Amino acid sequence: MSELRFLIFLGCITPYRLSSYEISARKVLGKLGVELVEMPEFNCCGFPMDLINHDLMLTLAARNLCIAEKQGLDILTLCNGCFSVLNETNKILEEDKKLNEKINGYLKEIGMEFKGTTNVKHLVHVLVEDVGIERIKDCVKKPLTNFRVAQHGGCHIVRPVKYVDHGDDPENPTMLKNLIRLTGAECLDYMDEAECCGNPVIGVNEAVPFQMAKEKLEHIRSVKAQALITVCPYCHIMYDLNQPRIERTFNEKFGIPVLHYTQLLGLAMGFTAEELAMKELRVKPTELLSQIQ
Amino acid sequence: MIFYVKPKSLFNYHTLIQFSVIGVKITLMGTNEMSEKEEYVPIVIKAEELDPKFKYEMSKIPGAENLMVCYQCGTCTADCPISRFSEFYRPRKIARMVQLGLKDRLLSDDALWLCSTCFTCVDHCPQGVEIAGIVRALRNLVVKERQMMPLVSKELATSILKSGYALILGATYEFPKSKLKKREMLSLPSLPKPNLPDLKKIFKVTGTSELLEKTKVFERVES
Image (tube, rainbow over all chains, first blue to last red; front, side, top):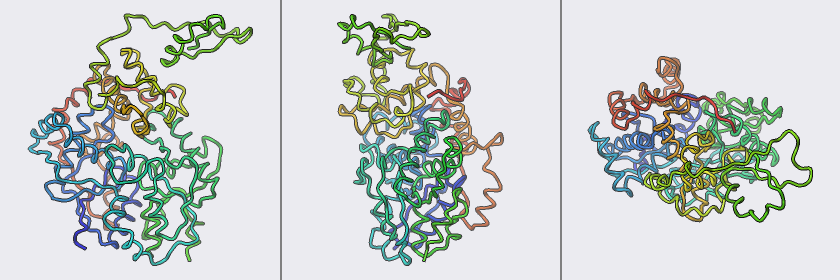
């Protein structure tokens, strides 16, 4: 079991606003035999800085990569954004010698050097590739056979294809769907499943992301899904924390609970709703939970 | 802006398509299509507005290297989730404006800030143009040359510099004690600490500290 050791990169938004994701992820990964090592030091992955200074983003990401290299461990992220920039930086700095020199020049100032000896994986990739379908199956004790859910994996665990090489098809992503099916739940198809949540724009414009999210919630409602399953804190915030505001803006009622995948898997493993911090969800999954047999 | 065209001037159709990709709405004027309120405002791009070197400068920026091979097929705009709901954000238009060298217009275009970086355009481009990379390069240029950035970005940058975390933490830039206490109660491991001296150096050497001092902010952009 000891081969499953990862450096956990929590990111900023998960510990600050979505402890339900962290709590359920730690429970589920623990049961699956994944050992999580805490980051000895941390700074933001760099994702929100890309728009003001690309070099800053690369350096912030590279600093975290250097820490992982020193620990001799691969990084596991819970957030699509963190995965995206850490993974992209890891690959770009290996490919682009000029950029590598430039960023390593910056890192020299803080006594670090990027070598390119670590790998970056998102939770979904670790579950599918490292833990493996069989081990997850073995841990499912209470299959959620009467659950009918929809999934939203988010963009950055599949795009851009140039840097994300985990074999999932961005036009028709199936990794998360297959993981959901392992819990016994039915995973429904719906229109425009792979469409972006729009959250990165919300800081400067709410109208567009709200319309995008409203349309997505409509598509999910139209297939009568009882819940939406996410694996990214940004997507989760868009559909769960912002759902009441979206409902008010468009004078619509959705009432679609949004669960982290780790919560769904946790239920199937036999953890209680309380242990998985279900209380912290804004849209209460009361009806869904009442179906657990 | 709307560009009204009388049917007889249709011989000019080819030129008009060139205009349409840089954002002029073209309406074919029938006998009574032009309402009384609307004015006849032709859009003219003056030759002196074009910066012929701009496309070469842009091509040197990581991510924007392939901009020259964009042949304006419009796949990026057609597949862009933002373009569906925004009147102004058109990735194809941005690529064309870069090629034409309309630097000033681009750097003052609010629509630049509407890209959600979903990378659909990057994956779908038949020419391998990284549209999202071009948009990022342009945003970086706005910050550097026009000294403007979104308020939220300035807040987050300051937060990273002072706390390590990219969060809107208020004036103290401290991770709230209540949240740290809650972690203890839930027996979650304590949060990893930032290395503030290192962050200060990184912000300095990448030129970000200077940018933060100089830049003014804007809060919202129209869609």
